[in-house]
Image 1 (cartoon, rainbow, N blue to C red):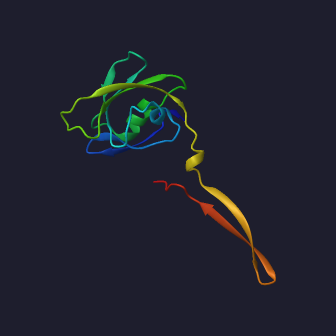
Image 2 (cartoon, rainbow, N blue to C red):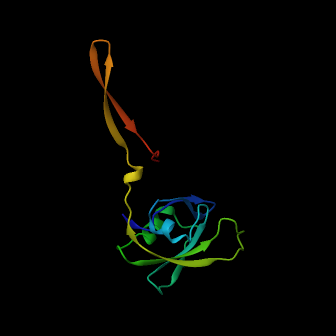
Image 3 (cartoon, one colour):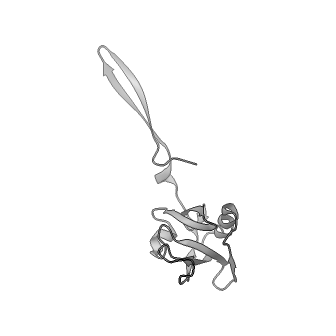
Length: 130
């Protein structure tokens, strides 16, 4: 994926940051926090910012994704600000997001039970998928 590395959710007509992917542009920038609301998205360093309040989540995600190394600008309403709070515009460079840390993993263990040795499979799910 080429995006900003944020897991988003829709809450009260706002696209809200639910989680920051470790090592992603959003987390590394230090400019975003869980609970921040995205109110607008702009393409490139000086493209017009389009308001996204009330826009479907999948449409907002499509606007945020793009080519590796390209810039996306987000109009952010901080988590602790009210609806009339002060917005800030941040720029992030899209990058490849590795989902390895969130991927399911498997291991096989050999366990001795009396005279028999049995193989037991273990599946680790670091996160649950919706």
